[in-house]
Image (cartoon, rainbow, N blue to C red):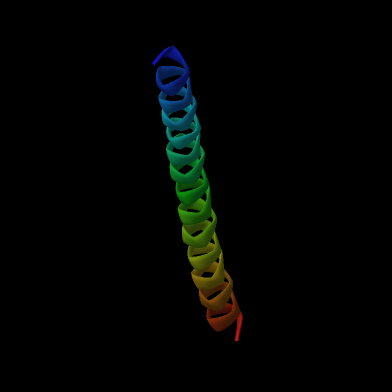
Length: 51
């Protein structure tokens, strides 16, 4: 029975690691997409105001 508990703990630990890292990746990607959109808008406004 102890071996089964160890395996269940291993699976839970792997799942927790996956969840945390996937969430962190999602946050980083969202920040980069937001920054890209803001910079694109900034460049367009700068271009329009100079011409």
